[in-house]
Amino acid sequence: MGELLLIGTGICGAKGMTLEGLEAAKSCSFLFAEQYTNLVPDGFLEELERLCGKKIALLSRMDVEGEKTLLDAAEKGSAALLVPGDPLIATTHVSLVVSARKRGVRARVVHSSSILSAAIGESGLQTYKFGKTSTLAYWRENYKPMAAYEAVAENLARRLHSLLLLDIDEQLGPMRPQTAAKTMLDMESAGKKGIFSGQTKVVLLQGLGWSCQKVSWLPLSQMLSLPPSGKDPPAAIIVPAGLHFMEEEFLSQLGKG
Image (cartoon, rainbow, N blue to C red):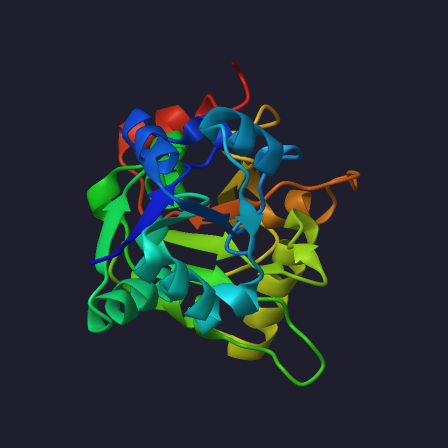
């Protein structure tokens, strides 16, 4: 019976992979990687190849979701897909596990760090006070999803914090904080629930785990007017509900070192 491994490489580039993950990758007959579920730092694939001592085939989103390339390789021996973050956070990779087992291929996961835990930890907010996580998607001419707005509304009604993952589009790239702020204010204009205004303060988390990591506590009006940068890393936003005094103190110290 063949084996398919899903190996997380964490949130901080190739060196975010655990020792267990590195050993597993080195033992595989076939190595693949994907970079569409999250952006990765420049040189990511080359660094992975150096660490593993093997060539790695980069798969497109279509290749991963089609599953055939990975499952065919796994039936021949052992194949690994190297995934930024923690593999089973993306539903595509859950589907891979199910499909592999249906074909009689053993499926194994080697976990690593995830934006879900890292964002909460870096914000200083209490883990058990978080509600539903949502993706803040790009708005287009005929596509203006309100799911993130509704999720925040539901969480706030229950006095729970909201983690919003900013969209990453293959053509548009990662959503910039300025675009995120505008989208949130546009959602308020459409939803009219009094959730967002220019004075609404949020936690902005940029490039977690990267050398350019930055965590800020600022109002949407300030985020909207942030100066443009050449290349924005992936980002997330936390909309807090009621704050404990320790949470308030931590947030007040953001940016002070």
